[in-house]
Image: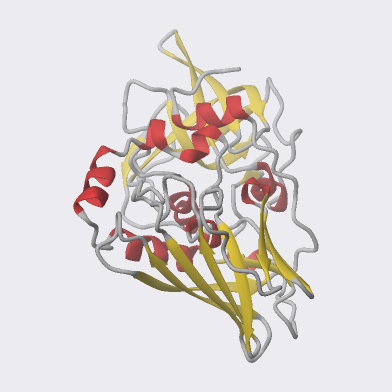
Length: 345
């Protein structure tokens, strides 16, 4: 987003003429249904609280305009994302004067916005994401084992493709009735199911390979998916769970993951609100690139209850220079505030 002016008053709105990298990151994690991504506001005020919890952090800033006091609530990313970009629980303290750039809530009556950047009184600037050029150098790997991450651009392509998928009448009805403020699983500390969980950007993924299984650990909601390689089949009439039941096999050096038995969770594809049907079936094929720095993941999603045709897409994870996944620990009260009317705890 580009601004037409810099303000020290409580509110300035500017039409967007370009899309900054930080706003691209925001689009990956936050709904444009809630926030007006084409406008930027500038708020100057005093920090009253910085709420360092997951799934999203909140910054509260008090402003005074024409004698009227307003407390603004700025939503930002999860603590692992912010930690890797120089933030900590003590980065901002009450009483500090700051200048905040943000995308406003579409409901103009709410003093609520999505943080783009924060400038301190000493001129230093904090942003939710440092951007791809500042990530640690990729590590060349000889197997799928290791820590991996996905780029924003790849996620946005996946999201666009998912929004174009043809649905059945039941799928169309589910999409039309979906209210992201109340039905998003994140608002109840429930992780996205596959294939959406595979596509989440910024949060790291770790693959561990053992003789009888592969464990795919996603930092987002601390999801651990066990892929059984011991020849078992999917259990007949087995329990349906959020991530389903996964079995796998090796096709040469390619890991093939077959998953069924998904519970009725929303957001099987980003931005759609489509649930997981009882017959939902996902096949993922993980293949290491020749230079060992990337994994291509061919996705096949079938769900005859909600999709009129199979959905196919190829995701790409790149090898990460980060050494570990960070703790997520979603808190129910914070998750609910993420989608409902945000209030101070």
